[in-house]
Length: 430
Ligand SMILES: Nc1ncnc2c1ncn2[C@@H]1O[C@H](COP(=O)(O)OP(=O)(O)OP(=O)(O)O)[C@@H](O)[C@H]1O
Ligand SMILES: O=C(O)[C@@H](O)C(=O)CO
Image 1: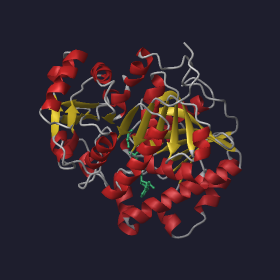
Image 2 (image 1 turned 90 degrees about the horizontal axis):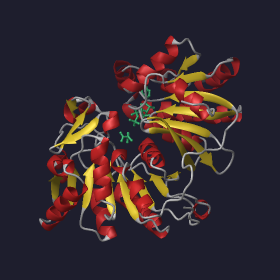
Image 3 (image 1 turned 120 degrees about the vertical axis):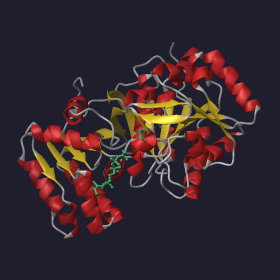
Image 4 (image 1 turned 135 degrees about the horizontal axis):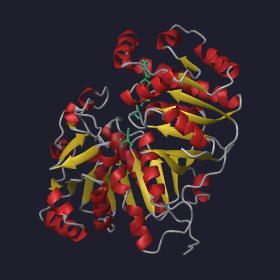
Protein backbone atom coordinates (compact mmCIF):
# COMPACT_ATOMS: atom_id res chain seq x y z
CA UNK A 1 0.00 0.00 0.00
CA UNK A 2 1.30 3.49 -0.77
CA UNK A 3 -0.07 6.37 1.25
CA UNK A 4 0.56 9.89 -0.04
CA UNK A 5 0.52 11.79 3.23
CA UNK A 6 3.89 12.25 4.91
CA UNK A 7 2.21 13.50 8.11
CA UNK A 8 4.21 12.18 11.06
CA UNK A 9 2.38 9.53 13.07
CA UNK A 10 4.67 9.26 16.06
CA UNK A 11 6.15 12.31 17.77
CA UNK A 12 9.14 11.78 20.05
CA UNK A 13 10.89 13.92 22.62
CA UNK A 14 14.37 12.75 23.68
CA UNK A 15 16.21 14.10 26.70
CA UNK A 16 19.62 13.89 25.06
CA UNK A 17 21.26 13.84 21.69
CA UNK A 18 22.54 10.33 21.06
CA UNK A 19 19.53 8.97 22.97
CA UNK A 20 17.39 10.54 20.26
CA UNK A 21 19.45 8.79 17.59
CA UNK A 22 19.08 5.49 19.45
CA UNK A 23 15.28 5.82 19.42
CA UNK A 24 15.24 6.89 15.77
CA UNK A 25 17.30 3.80 14.92
CA UNK A 26 14.69 1.56 16.53
CA UNK A 27 11.84 3.16 14.57
CA UNK A 28 13.67 2.85 11.25
CA UNK A 29 14.34 -0.82 12.04
CA UNK A 30 10.58 -1.22 12.33
CA UNK A 31 10.02 0.43 8.94
CA UNK A 32 9.13 4.01 9.93
CA UNK A 33 10.88 6.73 7.94
CA UNK A 34 12.34 8.86 10.72
CA UNK A 35 14.04 12.23 11.07
CA UNK A 36 15.81 13.64 14.10
CA UNK A 37 15.68 17.35 14.73
CA UNK A 38 18.16 19.18 16.92
CA UNK A 39 15.69 21.16 19.02
CA UNK A 40 12.27 22.20 17.71
CA UNK A 41 12.34 22.42 13.89
CA UNK A 42 12.03 25.81 12.20
CA UNK A 43 8.95 26.56 10.06
CA UNK A 44 11.08 26.02 6.95
CA UNK A 45 12.21 22.57 8.10
CA UNK A 46 8.65 21.68 9.13
CA UNK A 47 7.36 22.56 5.67
CA UNK A 48 9.71 20.07 3.98
CA UNK A 49 9.26 17.19 6.42
CA UNK A 50 8.68 13.74 4.97
CA UNK A 51 8.64 11.35 7.90
CA UNK A 52 6.50 8.78 9.69
CA UNK A 53 8.22 9.66 12.96
CA UNK A 54 9.95 12.81 14.18
CA UNK A 55 12.38 12.73 17.11
CA UNK A 56 13.13 16.08 18.72
CA UNK A 57 16.47 15.94 20.51
CA UNK A 58 16.60 18.13 23.61
CA UNK A 59 19.33 18.49 26.21
CA UNK A 60 16.92 18.16 29.13
CA UNK A 61 18.41 15.25 31.07
CA UNK A 62 20.45 17.34 33.46
CA UNK A 63 19.04 20.84 33.05
CA UNK A 64 16.99 22.37 35.90
CA UNK A 65 13.52 20.74 36.18
CA UNK A 66 11.58 23.87 35.17
CA UNK A 67 13.62 24.25 31.99
CA UNK A 68 13.31 20.57 31.10
CA UNK A 69 9.52 20.67 31.55
CA UNK A 70 9.11 23.90 29.55
CA UNK A 71 11.24 22.64 26.64
CA UNK A 72 9.47 19.29 26.59
CA UNK A 73 6.03 20.95 26.56
CA UNK A 74 7.11 23.22 23.70
CA UNK A 75 8.30 20.15 21.76
CA UNK A 76 4.99 18.41 22.51
CA UNK A 77 3.01 21.35 21.20
CA UNK A 78 5.01 21.40 17.96
CA UNK A 79 4.56 17.64 17.47
CA UNK A 80 0.80 17.89 18.05
CA UNK A 81 0.60 20.73 15.53
CA UNK A 82 2.13 18.36 12.96
CA UNK A 83 -0.67 15.89 13.67
CA UNK A 84 1.27 13.21 15.56
CA UNK A 85 -1.09 10.57 16.94
CA UNK A 86 1.09 9.23 19.72
CA UNK A 87 3.90 10.77 21.77
CA UNK A 88 7.03 8.99 23.04
CA UNK A 89 9.28 10.48 25.73
CA UNK A 90 12.73 8.89 25.41
CA UNK A 91 15.18 8.78 28.31
CA UNK A 92 18.22 6.69 29.04
CA UNK A 93 18.11 2.90 29.32
CA UNK A 94 19.88 3.37 32.66
CA UNK A 95 17.13 5.79 33.78
CA UNK A 96 19.72 8.59 34.13
CA UNK A 97 18.33 11.36 36.26
CA UNK A 98 19.61 13.75 38.89
CA UNK A 99 18.39 13.75 42.50
CA UNK A 100 15.98 16.50 41.39
CA UNK A 101 14.52 14.74 38.31
CA UNK A 102 13.70 15.12 35.42
CA UNK A 103 12.03 11.94 34.16
CA UNK A 104 9.07 12.04 36.55
CA UNK A 105 8.32 15.74 36.24
CA UNK A 106 8.56 15.76 32.44
CA UNK A 107 6.35 12.64 32.16
CA UNK A 108 3.80 14.20 34.51
CA UNK A 109 3.70 17.47 32.55
CA UNK A 110 3.33 15.62 29.23
CA UNK A 111 0.51 13.44 30.61
CA UNK A 112 -1.38 16.48 31.86
CA UNK A 113 -0.90 18.41 28.63
CA UNK A 114 -2.21 15.41 26.68
CA UNK A 115 -5.21 15.11 29.00
CA UNK A 116 -4.26 11.51 29.75
CA UNK A 117 -4.26 9.66 33.08
CA UNK A 118 -1.80 6.82 32.43
CA UNK A 119 1.55 5.97 30.88
CA UNK A 120 4.21 3.28 31.06
CA UNK A 121 7.79 3.91 32.17
CA UNK A 122 10.09 1.26 30.72
CA UNK A 123 13.80 1.89 30.10
CA UNK A 124 14.51 -1.79 29.21
CA UNK A 125 16.91 -2.37 26.29
CA UNK A 126 17.73 -6.11 26.40
CA UNK A 127 20.00 -6.00 23.32
CA UNK A 128 22.31 -3.73 25.33
CA UNK A 129 21.86 -5.66 28.57
CA UNK A 130 19.23 -3.47 30.28
CA UNK A 131 16.36 -5.52 31.74
CA UNK A 132 13.71 -4.86 34.40
CA UNK A 133 12.31 -7.38 36.86
CA UNK A 134 9.96 -6.57 39.76
CA UNK A 135 10.66 -2.92 39.02
CA UNK A 136 14.43 -3.32 39.45
CA UNK A 137 16.76 -2.30 36.62
CA UNK A 138 19.70 -4.53 35.72
CA UNK A 139 22.66 -3.57 33.52
CA UNK A 140 23.97 -6.88 32.17
CA UNK A 141 24.25 -9.05 35.34
CA UNK A 142 24.39 -6.21 37.86
CA UNK A 143 21.73 -4.14 39.55
CA UNK A 144 21.83 -0.55 38.25
CA UNK A 145 23.39 0.77 41.46
CA UNK A 146 26.24 -1.77 41.25
CA UNK A 147 26.84 -1.45 37.51
CA UNK A 148 29.21 1.52 37.55
CA UNK A 149 26.31 3.95 37.06
CA UNK A 150 26.52 4.79 40.77
CA UNK A 151 29.72 6.69 39.86
CA UNK A 152 28.34 8.66 36.90
CA UNK A 153 29.59 12.26 37.24
CA UNK A 154 26.25 13.97 36.48
CA UNK A 155 23.54 11.38 37.11
CA UNK A 156 24.77 8.87 39.70
CA UNK A 157 22.19 6.07 39.97
CA UNK A 158 22.32 4.72 43.51
CA UNK A 159 18.99 2.86 43.60
CA UNK A 160 17.94 0.07 41.21
CA UNK A 161 14.31 0.19 42.40
CA UNK A 162 12.72 2.30 39.68
CA UNK A 163 9.42 2.67 41.54
CA UNK A 164 11.27 4.50 44.32
CA UNK A 165 13.35 6.56 41.89
CA UNK A 166 10.35 7.59 39.80
CA UNK A 167 8.02 8.21 42.74
CA UNK A 168 10.57 10.69 44.15
CA UNK A 169 10.21 12.70 40.93
CA UNK A 170 6.43 12.96 40.58
CA UNK A 171 3.32 13.74 42.61
CA UNK A 172 1.35 11.18 40.54
CA UNK A 173 1.01 7.62 41.92
CA UNK A 174 3.58 5.18 40.50
CA UNK A 175 2.83 1.45 40.21
CA UNK A 176 4.28 -1.75 38.74
CA UNK A 177 3.27 -3.69 35.65
CA UNK A 178 4.74 -6.98 36.84
CA UNK A 179 6.47 -9.55 34.71
CA UNK A 180 3.68 -12.07 35.45
CA UNK A 181 1.29 -10.01 33.30
CA UNK A 182 3.83 -9.17 30.59
CA UNK A 183 4.71 -12.85 30.14
CA UNK A 184 1.02 -13.71 29.59
CA UNK A 185 0.79 -11.50 26.49
CA UNK A 186 -1.05 -8.50 25.09
CA UNK A 187 -4.51 -9.17 26.57
CA UNK A 188 -3.10 -9.78 30.05
CA UNK A 189 -1.14 -6.52 29.85
CA UNK A 190 -4.25 -4.62 28.75
CA UNK A 191 -6.24 -6.10 31.63
CA UNK A 192 -3.49 -5.23 34.12
CA UNK A 193 -3.29 -1.66 32.80
CA UNK A 194 -7.07 -1.29 33.26
CA UNK A 195 -6.72 -2.54 36.83
CA UNK A 196 -3.79 -0.21 37.62
CA UNK A 197 -5.72 2.72 36.17
CA UNK A 198 -8.71 1.90 38.30
CA UNK A 199 -6.49 1.95 41.37
CA UNK A 200 -5.36 5.45 40.38
CA UNK A 201 -1.85 4.53 39.18
CA UNK A 202 -0.72 7.12 36.63
CA UNK A 203 2.73 5.78 35.74
CA UNK A 204 3.62 2.10 35.76
CA UNK A 205 7.17 0.81 35.65
CA UNK A 206 6.93 -2.11 33.21
CA UNK A 207 9.03 -5.24 33.71
CA UNK A 208 10.68 -6.51 30.51
CA UNK A 209 13.39 -9.13 30.02
CA UNK A 210 13.45 -9.61 26.26
CA UNK A 211 12.53 -8.02 22.95
CA UNK A 212 9.46 -10.29 22.92
CA UNK A 213 8.27 -8.58 26.13
CA UNK A 214 8.78 -5.17 24.55
CA UNK A 215 6.77 -6.17 21.46
CA UNK A 216 3.99 -7.29 23.82
CA UNK A 217 4.05 -3.96 25.67
CA UNK A 218 4.13 -2.00 22.39
CA UNK A 219 1.11 -3.85 21.00
CA UNK A 220 -0.83 -3.47 24.26
CA UNK A 221 -0.19 0.28 24.36
CA UNK A 222 -1.20 1.19 20.79
CA UNK A 223 -3.93 3.49 22.12
CA UNK A 224 -2.04 5.26 24.90
CA UNK A 225 -1.42 8.93 24.00
CA UNK A 226 1.96 8.89 25.79
CA UNK A 227 4.64 6.25 26.25
CA UNK A 228 7.89 6.84 28.13
CA UNK A 229 11.05 4.78 28.17
CA UNK A 230 14.23 3.66 26.46
CA UNK A 231 14.42 2.89 22.76
CA UNK A 232 13.43 -0.73 23.45
CA UNK A 233 9.84 0.20 24.26
CA UNK A 234 9.55 1.60 20.72
CA UNK A 235 10.29 -1.81 19.15
CA UNK A 236 6.63 -2.73 18.79
CA UNK A 237 5.23 0.68 17.80
CA UNK A 238 5.82 0.64 14.02
CA UNK A 239 3.77 -2.56 13.81
CA UNK A 240 0.80 -0.81 15.47
CA UNK A 241 0.76 1.80 12.69
CA UNK A 242 1.31 -0.84 10.00
CA UNK A 243 -1.58 -2.91 11.35
CA UNK A 244 -3.78 0.20 11.15
CA UNK A 245 -2.78 0.67 7.47
CA UNK A 246 -1.00 3.94 8.17
CA UNK A 247 2.60 3.11 7.23
CA UNK A 248 3.91 3.77 3.75
CA UNK A 249 5.52 0.98 1.77
CA UNK A 250 9.09 2.20 1.41
CA UNK A 251 12.66 1.46 2.46
CA UNK A 252 12.77 3.52 5.65
CA UNK A 253 16.54 3.18 5.99
CA UNK A 254 17.64 4.42 2.56
CA UNK A 255 20.08 7.35 2.65
CA UNK A 256 21.75 9.31 -0.16
CA UNK A 257 25.46 8.48 -0.71
CA UNK A 258 27.90 11.04 0.69
CA UNK A 259 31.32 11.35 -1.01
CA UNK A 260 34.35 13.03 0.59
CA UNK A 261 36.90 12.57 3.35
CA UNK A 262 36.19 10.84 6.67
CA UNK A 263 37.27 11.06 10.30
CA UNK A 264 36.54 9.62 13.76
CA UNK A 265 36.18 12.05 16.69
CA UNK A 266 36.01 10.54 20.19
CA UNK A 267 35.21 12.65 23.24
CA UNK A 268 33.61 9.96 25.37
CA UNK A 269 35.61 8.44 28.21
CA UNK A 270 33.33 5.42 28.71
CA UNK A 271 34.66 1.88 28.97
CA UNK A 272 33.21 1.03 25.53
CA UNK A 273 34.85 4.03 23.84
CA UNK A 274 38.19 3.31 25.56
CA UNK A 275 38.05 -0.22 24.09
CA UNK A 276 37.18 1.17 20.64
CA UNK A 277 40.13 3.59 20.76
CA UNK A 278 42.41 0.72 21.86
CA UNK A 279 41.23 -1.39 18.91
CA UNK A 280 42.07 1.44 16.48
CA UNK A 281 45.53 1.98 18.03
CA UNK A 282 46.26 -1.77 18.05
CA UNK A 283 45.49 -1.83 14.30
CA UNK A 284 48.17 0.91 13.96
CA UNK A 285 45.81 3.28 12.22
CA UNK A 286 46.66 7.01 12.42
CA UNK A 287 45.45 8.70 15.60
CA UNK A 288 46.03 11.94 17.47
CA UNK A 289 45.25 12.52 21.14
CA UNK A 290 43.76 15.84 22.20
CA UNK A 291 45.23 16.77 25.58
CA UNK A 292 42.90 18.93 27.72
CA UNK A 293 45.90 20.39 29.58
CA UNK A 294 47.43 21.53 26.27
CA UNK A 295 44.09 23.14 25.41
CA UNK A 296 44.00 24.90 28.79
CA UNK A 297 47.56 26.15 28.18
CA UNK A 298 46.42 27.73 24.91
CA UNK A 299 48.49 25.46 22.64
CA UNK A 300 47.38 25.39 18.96
CA UNK A 301 45.81 21.93 19.31
CA UNK A 302 43.09 22.51 16.69
CA UNK A 303 45.56 23.65 14.01
CA UNK A 304 47.82 20.70 14.82
CA UNK A 305 44.92 18.27 14.44
CA UNK A 306 43.89 19.73 11.08
CA UNK A 307 47.48 19.52 9.80
CA UNK A 308 47.79 15.93 11.10
CA UNK A 309 44.68 14.80 9.21
CA UNK A 310 45.88 16.44 6.00
CA UNK A 311 49.25 14.68 6.21
CA UNK A 312 47.74 11.16 6.47
CA UNK A 313 46.76 8.79 3.67
CA UNK A 314 44.50 6.66 5.86
CA UNK A 315 41.44 7.81 7.86
CA UNK A 316 42.30 9.40 11.20
CA UNK A 317 41.01 9.12 14.78
CA UNK A 318 41.17 12.29 16.89
CA UNK A 319 40.45 11.41 20.52
CA UNK A 320 40.32 12.90 24.00
CA UNK A 321 39.25 9.53 25.38
CA UNK A 322 41.27 8.57 28.46
CA UNK A 323 41.00 6.17 31.37
CA UNK A 324 38.75 7.21 34.29
CA UNK A 325 41.88 7.90 36.41
CA UNK A 326 43.37 10.19 33.74
CA UNK A 327 40.05 12.01 33.33
CA UNK A 328 39.80 12.51 37.11
CA UNK A 329 43.36 13.86 37.26
CA UNK A 330 42.56 16.41 34.52
CA UNK A 331 39.25 17.31 36.20
CA UNK A 332 41.09 17.94 39.49
CA UNK A 333 43.32 20.44 37.71
CA UNK A 334 40.77 22.14 35.46
CA UNK A 335 37.42 21.42 37.08
CA UNK A 336 34.85 19.00 35.60
CA UNK A 337 32.95 21.60 33.59
CA UNK A 338 35.96 23.45 32.21
CA UNK A 339 37.70 20.21 31.16
CA UNK A 340 34.55 19.01 29.36
CA UNK A 341 33.89 22.36 27.73
CA UNK A 342 37.49 22.69 26.48
CA UNK A 343 37.45 19.24 24.89
CA UNK A 344 33.96 19.64 23.41
CA UNK A 345 34.74 23.01 21.91
CA UNK A 346 38.08 21.78 20.47
CA UNK A 347 36.46 18.72 18.87
CA UNK A 348 33.71 20.96 17.48
CA UNK A 349 36.27 23.34 15.97
CA UNK A 350 38.25 20.43 14.56
CA UNK A 351 35.07 19.05 12.95
CA UNK A 352 34.33 22.44 11.36
CA UNK A 353 37.93 22.82 10.13
CA UNK A 354 37.88 19.31 8.66
CA UNK A 355 34.59 20.00 6.88
CA UNK A 356 36.32 23.02 5.28
CA UNK A 357 39.14 20.63 4.25
CA UNK A 358 36.68 18.32 2.47
CA UNK A 359 35.73 15.83 5.19
CA UNK A 360 32.09 14.79 4.76
CA UNK A 361 31.76 11.63 6.87
CA UNK A 362 32.07 11.84 10.67
CA UNK A 363 31.97 9.10 13.29
CA UNK A 364 31.54 10.72 16.72
CA UNK A 365 31.70 9.04 20.15
CA UNK A 366 29.88 10.52 23.16
CA UNK A 367 26.53 12.24 23.67
CA UNK A 368 27.86 15.65 24.74
CA UNK A 369 30.59 15.40 22.14
CA UNK A 370 28.07 14.59 19.39
CA UNK A 371 26.01 17.60 20.45
CA UNK A 372 29.06 19.87 20.25
CA UNK A 373 30.15 18.50 16.85
CA UNK A 374 26.71 18.69 15.28
CA UNK A 375 26.29 22.25 16.56
CA UNK A 376 29.70 23.28 15.19
CA UNK A 377 28.77 21.78 11.82
CA UNK A 378 25.47 23.71 11.83
CA UNK A 379 23.41 20.51 11.41
CA UNK A 380 19.72 20.90 12.38
CA UNK A 381 18.06 17.80 10.90
CA UNK A 382 19.18 14.22 10.38
CA UNK A 383 17.66 11.56 8.17
CA UNK A 384 18.09 8.20 9.93
CA UNK A 385 19.46 5.17 8.08
CA UNK A 386 20.37 1.57 8.85
CA UNK A 387 21.74 0.37 12.17
CA UNK A 388 25.51 0.06 12.56
CA UNK A 389 25.47 -1.49 16.05
CA UNK A 390 22.51 -1.69 18.49
CA UNK A 391 21.46 1.86 19.32
CA UNK A 392 23.57 3.53 16.62
CA UNK A 393 22.36 4.18 13.06
CA UNK A 394 24.01 5.82 10.06
CA UNK A 395 22.55 9.28 9.43
CA UNK A 396 22.76 11.99 6.76
CA UNK A 397 22.13 15.68 7.44
CA UNK A 398 19.32 17.49 5.59
CA UNK A 399 19.56 21.11 4.44
CA UNK A 400 22.88 22.47 3.18
CA UNK A 401 25.58 20.15 1.87
CA UNK A 402 24.86 16.62 3.11
CA UNK A 403 27.16 15.17 5.75
CA UNK A 404 27.14 11.52 6.81
CA UNK A 405 27.27 11.09 10.59
CA UNK A 406 27.39 8.17 13.03
CA UNK A 407 26.70 9.50 16.53
CA UNK A 408 27.43 6.97 19.26
CA UNK A 409 26.28 7.02 22.89
CA UNK A 410 29.35 6.55 25.08
CA UNK A 411 28.45 3.04 26.18
CA UNK A 412 27.31 1.66 22.82
CA UNK A 413 29.05 -0.15 19.99
CA UNK A 414 31.34 -3.17 19.65
CA UNK A 415 35.15 -2.99 19.90
CA UNK A 416 35.53 -2.54 16.11
CA UNK A 417 32.81 0.14 15.97
CA UNK A 418 34.93 2.93 14.43
CA UNK A 419 36.04 0.94 11.36
CA UNK A 420 32.61 -0.63 10.98
CA UNK A 421 30.89 2.77 11.10
CA UNK A 422 33.30 4.30 8.56
CA UNK A 423 32.64 1.41 6.17
CA UNK A 424 28.87 1.81 6.50
CA UNK A 425 28.92 5.61 6.10
CA UNK A 426 30.95 5.10 2.92
CA UNK A 427 28.08 3.04 1.55
CA UNK A 428 29.49 -0.39 2.33
CA UNK A 429 28.06 -3.17 4.44
CA UNK A 430 28.76 -2.92 8.18
N1 LIG B 1 40.57 13.38 28.73
C1 LIG B 1 39.51 14.03 29.21
N2 LIG B 1 39.62 14.76 30.34
C2 LIG B 1 38.55 15.42 30.81
N3 LIG B 1 37.34 15.46 30.24
C3 LIG B 1 37.20 14.75 29.09
C4 LIG B 1 38.27 14.01 28.54
N4 LIG B 1 37.83 13.40 27.43
C5 LIG B 1 36.55 13.74 27.28
N5 LIG B 1 36.16 14.57 28.27
C6 LIG B 1 34.83 15.14 28.46
O1 LIG B 1 34.00 14.13 29.03
C7 LIG B 1 32.65 14.32 28.57
C8 LIG B 1 32.20 13.01 27.95
O2 LIG B 1 30.83 13.13 27.68
P1 LIG B 1 30.13 12.50 26.43
O3 LIG B 1 28.67 12.69 26.65
O4 LIG B 1 30.70 13.02 25.17
O5 LIG B 1 30.52 10.98 26.54
P2 LIG B 1 29.77 9.85 27.41
O6 LIG B 1 29.31 10.43 28.71
O7 LIG B 1 30.68 8.67 27.43
O8 LIG B 1 28.56 9.52 26.44
P3 LIG B 1 26.96 9.41 26.70
O9 LIG B 1 26.52 10.71 27.31
O10 LIG B 1 26.44 9.21 25.34
O11 LIG B 1 26.79 8.24 27.61
C9 LIG B 1 32.68 15.46 27.56
O12 LIG B 1 32.31 16.66 28.19
C10 LIG B 1 34.15 15.49 27.15
O13 LIG B 1 34.53 16.74 26.65
O1 LIG C 1 19.10 4.66 26.22
C1 LIG C 1 20.33 4.72 26.15
O2 LIG C 1 21.09 4.01 26.83
C2 LIG C 1 20.94 5.74 25.23
O3 LIG C 1 20.10 6.00 24.15
C3 LIG C 1 21.17 7.00 25.97
O4 LIG C 1 20.26 7.76 26.17
C4 LIG C 1 22.56 7.22 26.44
O5 LIG C 1 22.76 8.52 26.91
